[in-house]
Length: 377
Image (cartoon, rainbow, N blue to C red):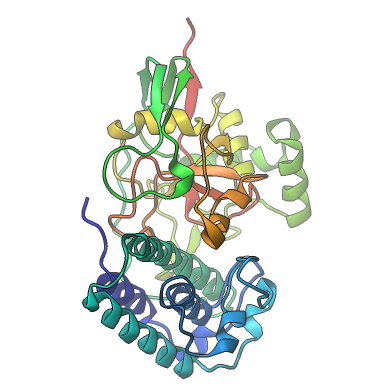
C-alpha cells in the first residue's frame, strides 16, 4: 500500500471543504463535534507543534491544541464553535503558511528519520480528521430545518446479498499490524490470541433489517438492552437511528433528505443499538479479534462495524515517546472498538488491523454492525 504524501493529503482536506460556504465553517453542533474551521487549523497546528517548532502565531498554539496536556493549556473542546476570530480567511492564510514551510523543509532533505516518522503520523492524523470533518458537517447540517445538502451527488442504490454466515475455525491467530507500512501505536504489539470457532455474517445489517427490529418493538423491550444502553435510549428518546425520519422512510444524508435505501447498511447507530439488535436476532457482535481474523474474506467496508471488544492496550503495547504518547494510550478506557472503515474513510487509510474507538453512546460516526454467533461443538 502506497503511503500518502504531504501534498495529496493536504489537498484532499481542502477538497472536502470546497462545498462549504464561509458560514458553514464556524458553528459547532455539539461538544463531540468540531467546526470545519477548527479541523483546518488543528491539522496545521500538528505540523507546527511536532515538526516545524516555529509558530505562525503563538495564540494558535492555545486555540488549536486538541488534547495534548503535556504541550500546554488549550481552548476547551465544547467552546470551539465560539471562535469567530481568527476568521476563516485567516485560517486559510495560516494553513498556506504552514504548507509553504513544510514543503521547504521536505524539499531540503534535512529531516531526520525520526521527524519523517512524525510527518507520516501527521498525515494519517489528518486523514482521520478528514473523516471527522465529514461526520461533523453532516451532523451540523442535519440540525438546520432546511436540511441542506453538503453535496448533490447521491449514493448509488445498494444491493444486498442474502444474509449468510461463514464458519471460522478459530484457534490461535495473530492479531495486530505486521509487515511494512504505517500503523498507529494502538495496533501493536502483534500478538497471538485463541478464538473459539465462530460464524460471521457475509455483510452488515441493512436498513430494512434494522427497520424490522424497530417495528418489532426493539426500542421498547428492556430485556434486549444493556443497562447503560437502556438508560441512554430512555433519556435521549432513541426510537430509530440518527438521521432517520419518524416515518422510518427517509434519512438525512450528505446529499440532503433522501428515501431510505432498504438494502444499504444501517448507519449512525450506537454500540448499544447494535448490541440490542444482535440480541433480538439471537446472535451477538463479533469481537475485534474475530473481525480481524476474518478480514481477508470481507468485502470493502461501507460502515464501521461495532465490535464487542472494549478499547484496551494489546500485550506489549508501548505509547510513542514524548507528547505524541498522548495520541492513543490515554483513551484506552470506557470505549468500544469499531473495525473496518466507511464511505467517509479516505482511500488507503483502511487496513485489517485498524482500531477505531468511540464511546458506546456515540451515533454521529458512520457506524453500523455485522452479526456474529457461536458454533456449537
